[in-house]
Length: 147
Image 1 (cartoon, one colour):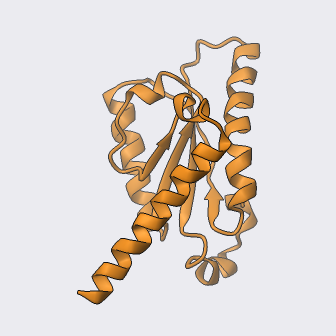
Image 2 (cartoon, one colour):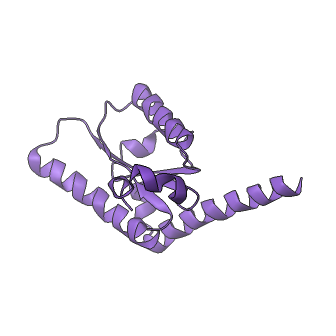
């Protein structure tokens, strides 16, 4: 489900079900030619489609972060965005990128970072990582209730 599909009126009632934000990170630097920019967007889109379709009732895709000065400042910016998204009501934030430059950075505030290396292992592997994240989160919540 895309962020633009959710109205202000619907958000409160949908929030318990739509607990995961998918945040695409293109990682373009502005040095890409038009065909390279197109390729970057297509590769990212190919990675996202399987998740968006499989988890439409649980995951909301937010607008992509297209341009970045790859480095510590960008890393801090993305971590802040992840924190802010959680404050709006998302329990999980999953970053997804097709850029090898992005996979070298650490995003501590993201619950999962899906990279080209992850995608290379196939859609089933990616889905298993997402579902494992949800299972672990559910187990933690159950343990807190029991304590």
